[in-house]
Image (cartoon, rainbow, N blue to C red; front, side, top):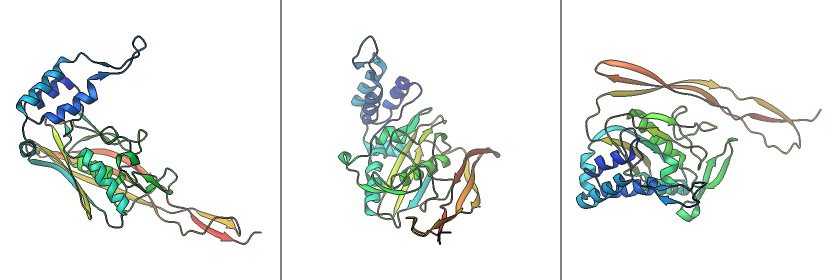
Length: 296
């Protein structure tokens, strides 16, 4: 069980430690208890955070079972599912590997969920396999961890429905088949992250499920959701440019494809009052149409 960082880490750890599972705070201590080296002291050192130690002891003494933790987070606030149809076995494996690191993560009130921070580097040493991944230029390249952007996109949509605040999110360089334009989220180790902040007074727990057919992500809370959410995307089709090449230019013909310009909004309704929030404006350039011609 993981625990995302809060604004007041020590206080959040104590309050959650009394109610939830000690493994969550163990991860929190790992993330926050050590201070980086300073110019005066070129050594990593333990920060004097007595509150964290007290929280850890409370958890060990009151350690609840994982089933009790899941029972306390019994109210669904946002969920989303995407299809794994036409995805390779390597892509499915990578999604399952990353999902194991994320399943059960608790985001306390004011806390931040960071995909890259929790999953870490995607390399073969951690069990990730080479699989197709869209590069910044729109090309497909086999890369360890390829395919887990679909996992990030699925989490992103569940977070939108749960009312989470989008701190960092990046669209793909091209439209992808597993999720509609305007609702995707691409990630790249330490360069592009998915960060969602919990603005609510309730902690949220992320639950993951990956099988051979679908990825399903859900955010649960300890109380009923006091509002409703709706996501709307307006989409404009973009036509491809046409590139004319002489014979023997070394570039194969390609038919081109459609691109899109999108605007995504979230409508939140609470106590009969609705509020519309702009989430993103994204552009997905169309692949160029390439035609070979006779040289003049």
